[in-house]
Image (cartoon, rainbow, N blue to C red; front, top):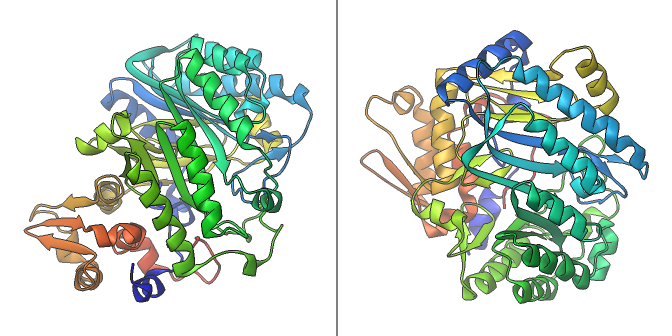
Length: 452
């Protein structure tokens, strides 16, 4: 890859799990009543089908690479009250539905979901389905910590319908693990992976990160070679997002100069990508890989891949409800985020209030641009009709795209834009050309990680 292109396009930019991105939500036009109205509309239009993201925020120790909202504690007596509050929040949404909801997707994220006991996780899922039913083609998944995911966790969740588990690996080098405060030997990951397979899980994912402090080429090669011994169905190969300015972020356990940047960092990805593709993995969208037989690969080939706050998924629902402190919900027509403080979250739910504190109602232009960005992030292409006035009314989009075209990153012909192979590393930058909020606002403070 050209170093000059990396230097040109390696700028701060969103990952586009939503559009508009969270920093540009207009909360002045948002209200709890508007959020409820959008939920009712989406529920009706989607025949009662929805996705659930459930945030389980507790961790026993702080990983210094993590930008998620979490609470560090060893007090496991906090599990039951939190589960109870989650189920009470779910009931607040149930009051808005005219029929029984059909849950198409559940993802347990965190934090560390396996901080919670198997018994408490069962209580949570049983509570969800006390007033709901499973959709015909449902898919349930959870994030497991290799050091504390037990056979009981795996068996209990399997019995409840879970068939996919993702394990956070990051890197197997001890110096790197010490720097990010996430020490887990290969043997622990192997044991957790083998246990899942023995029980019957059909899709196992490993999360790897490139660009970590002290990480060199030999570390990435060693980590991927060890990963390939286990052949998980899916691999997320994330770019480390260095955002130490985020409040509550633990990314202060190493120096800025310890982190690989620019062309050095990108070379780590390209090396890993080559190793993965040689063993039969297919690159999915941005920074994800899957075996050819995996449903994620098939969804990409059939142009049915979807992306939301949970990442890439085969389950395309236009409504995702986020339960738990800091969770983000998406009705397609609006976004809403729950309060981040656990005590405040619990208090609001106890008072019968859906605990959102900010959000955004999408207007017509937002919805048009959202579709284009989703198309690019999922299918690496998008198209528009002549009636799609966004390109007539916003000539700066065309100007920005022309620059990508001149650099050989995209091709545009007859209302169709295709991201070329050369342009894949810059898909976030290409999406930025459509982002009207980013163009209108030049934030003085740091908001996003670097794109490359």
